[in-house]
Length: 144
Image 1 (cartoon, rainbow, N blue to C red):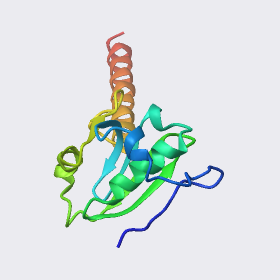
Image 2: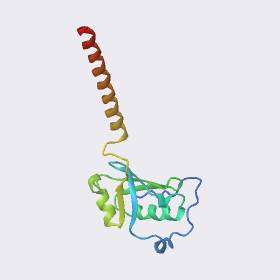
Image 3: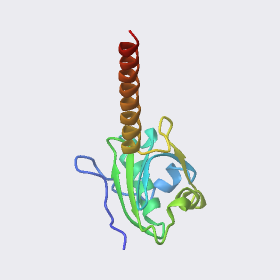
């Protein structure tokens, strides 16, 4: 069952989204900002502060089999999509969007790692640098 969540509080939802088909092309690029199995966030500057466009995209995404809810945030131009990973395999999400005329690109500036993995990598690197520095100081101190 699809949760028909509309735009977040403080934004006006469009009164008539049926007319949006003529205004917004079927091929619409979105940035894939974050993706975990069962949950992903899409964003587009074209959707920012555009209640009609974001509602149109929310409805398009909500039509996809396996999608359980789509939340729209017009103030950021983002869509939070939740889906059933047993119905929509996480590896096939982008291809599924493409088959529906929705182009999702990996957002520039993001890596394959999530933010928690990036944080752990940075912490490990810092710890190794501290250990190497102390080891060098110990070797120099012993040699002198």
